[in-house]
Length: 267
Image 1 (cartoon, rainbow, N blue to C red):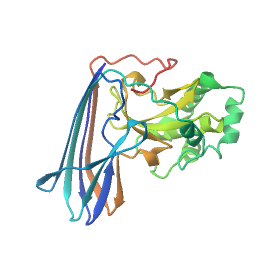
Image 2 (image 1 turned 180 degrees about the vertical axis):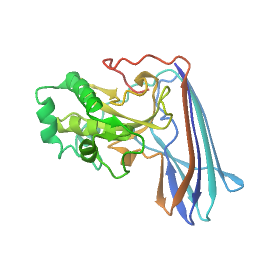
Image 3 (image 1 turned 135 degrees about the vertical axis):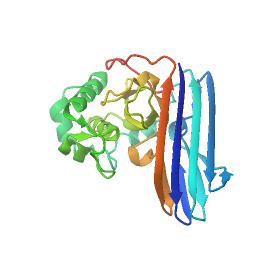
Image 4 (image 1 turned 120 degrees about the horizontal axis):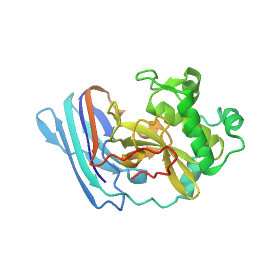
């Protein structure tokens, strides 16, 4: 399957700003073709950000700007084929079963056992996906950047990251390693960066998307981590910036049908 994805950002920075962008498709072995271009303009000059490697093939692009500047970023990638599954890392399986900032599995342990106490493995993953999908309403702009899984469950609404955080927390409460992945998602409406959950069961990572807004088989990973604190597409390490415009595109040559019961790996 060939996928063409991209992001166009425009923002202004304060003096002495250091920023990190996670907008590039993760580089993993297995793709039959991978072409990409990243152009960054700061003021009237083209600049080259530094690339830092993250886990799961993710890449962050870092800029340091001493002067207040208007920055424009254009990224485009054409990817064909399917990435290979990453090797299993025992330390990551420990890390991804612990509570985290936005996936408070310790606080939701009673809730998880009350609803899914007798379930395990893939049956548990599917049950969590269906339950979160039924419990929450997708409402654009309904959540705050500080909301975690507990807040999402109380308000019964949110956006993709909120759906993913709640699913992750419920799975971790049952000792299933789970993580959040930021992805390009062909077929998503409205188009944007998308967040999904991944669960490790039966020796492999499987993606679940309680929003059901795009076919999982078409998705391309950008990065992954404990929760959205690890996967933000744009963040400052020092200084300050103001985002003026964000446009995301993601298309697939042959958009597959989504089967919620199918086992799908990102890539």
